[in-house]
Image (cartoon, rainbow over all chains, first blue to last red):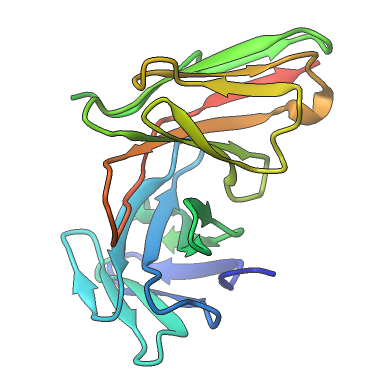
Amino acid sequence: DAKTTQPPSMDCAEGRAANLPCNHSTISGNEYVYWYRQIHSQGPQYIIHGLKNNETNEMASLIITEDRKSSTLILPHATLRDTAVYYCIVRFNTGNQFYFGTGTSLTVIP
Amino acid sequence: DTGVSQNPRHKITKRGQNVTFRCDPISEHNRLYWYRQTLGQGPEFLTYFQNEAQLEKSRLLSDRFSAERPKGSFSTLEIQRTEQGDSAMYLCASSPTGSSGANVLTFGAGSRLTVL
């Protein structure tokens, strides 16, 4: 079973906020939500992570619902360089496997 | 610190040949991971090391695959008798040791394998 569900693709106008949703309804109480992105032909790049509270860093904001069954990654002012595949990840069970899924392909449009 | 380094970046080989990839993690990171990524898919977990000990292996890691981390620093991933289905990007990641809580992985740029 998939650990996370994301829309396969999204578009966003340059300069606008990009809001990328993720469902993780089977998340356990001590599992973190991680977001990574991958630009074509590069390795995944860490963006942000969170457990229960909303988080913000220089790249993005992470909003986690109170029941923790879903989250939203917000890129406040999308640029063309933000065009990438964005992965929402939770750790698989109690091991160290991070389940990536197929992610959301975000295209920032000029 | 230059991050996670992977070599070679690209490898083209003929079916049946053996190939080896090397990963040099961030120096202070005790944990090292190998993932495989095929076109249009997200990375899939292969195996994980804590120092020199290989603690988890995915069922994707067939007996033709072997990974080592002999001194707890760099790691190698060898594929014997390559098949066309092995064509993929092989990603290495490392992370610091944490007794609990978040575990942020830093990925390398990957090694792309093409089996003809």
